[in-house]
Length: 337
Image (cartoon, rainbow, N blue to C red; front, side, top):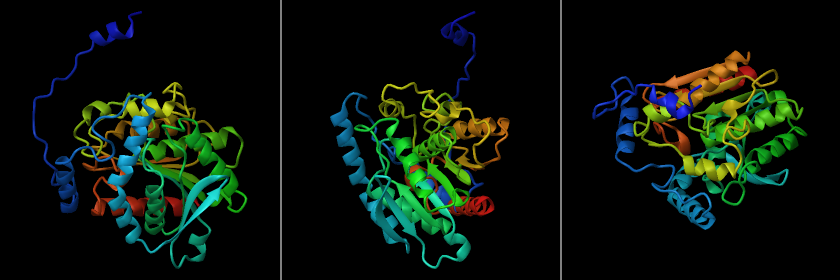
């Protein structure tokens, strides 16, 4: 049997000519403007160059620089919300609990346990707090944003273990049938991994799971890691250095590291997956959706025209398409919890 190198040599690649790809007319004017603006900027989620996985001090500087760079965005996010946000330790983990004003009785019974994005390395602290407020505002339900531990000082399995511990503690006061676990980008990875831990360790499952442009394959094996490279104006390319740092020597295909490779047999909750046709992680979403369906899990896949990765609140910004995502997710949460 030929080895992988020999087998690859038998495949014929597609050679693409140099070309310019403009924002299409099939999306809103606001979305076209957001694509054009992002195309003119460097990668927004991570620096152009990452330190080596063993350069821990270099990573600490990178995290500090990213936090500083996103401070104005955090201030804007918090300034635009009407939600009350409290900082509380839950199971020893710092969490931000955001409560919208004027909750009706049905909404007051629901809880969104949210895991922030940030390439598995960035996005903690103030950004995680702002995400609590934004999600509570958009979805109209109480939101707990987990400030889970991250590299360089706390690689896998710290993040999903923190989320598991928070969920277990929340069950003392919340009906699991009213709790939805969700996350964006890296947070989608953590949300899926924590839900697998919940199932595998015998806790009552949450009502549902929401995975928004999820980073569920740290091997980056999917087709769109090639076809959407540079076309995704948010990420522009893969995150191998971040993935290696997060894994901390564990196999990148471990099912809790890359949930795409997990067994989604009985016990995994209904799942909402969102992506876009220009999202670098589109293959992650497509492959995960098919795997869930093959396992008999109720799963919805929503793909938006020309939308890039939405980590760190980007994508189409305040365009109508982003509001459609919120509407679809609200509908999904109400139906399942």
